[in-house]
Image (cartoon, rainbow, N blue to C red; front, side):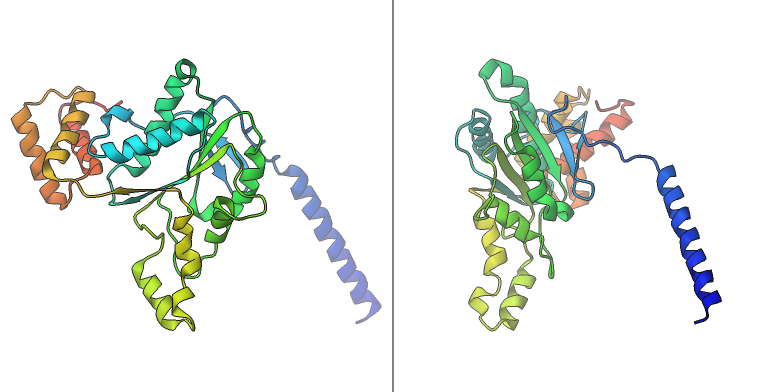
Length: 296
């Protein structure tokens, strides 16, 4: 390379450096992270940025509106109340059928305890939602909220793992056994359609191809064992489904004849091939639209 070529390359490099510095100076400063204990009682955790973003209005229904899940509701409510009082409590895995109120129950209990906090002496309870894709950043979140003067429920909706994923290791470490472990002021609640958080065909495939089939998936399957509570949600029968529909209709003040409501509910469930709380609220949205009403 000639001296002239070297000088030319050096000039180009210098120019590119100046352009980069100029662009950096023109870029807007990153938004400040929301403090862990701002005014809101619910936040969304962004693993990419390491920020807690306030959720000013949580999409939830009153606890009394949830029907057909009384037994699991009582267990999770009691567990959460114990935690909000500073007593012993367990991480919880809510698993089972779609649309049966798993995530709705978590949000409803959080809201219910928040409303009763002053009267019943609960500590401040903050709900933090984390996406499954951000589980690798759990240790960073734990360090941020550990020791804060509040209690936190870290909530992951629709938790499951597919072949090749390794993020479950971060969750496993936090739930039990890691050097830092889970802070005393934090619980982890998760919902999943799978009791063991991974599909059956994945379990069978790894067992079939492993040198030691008995231990091939033990690490992943044992993750569910680290939840102290396993709460099962199952498809509901027709009477329970109709009770859900009636409860939603009463709550939103729909003026519709009881027999007509029942007939529409049965027809609606038949066209969808399922009965669940989700199917019930979808019907109520349709009926409210027909009446020219908006759901609050």
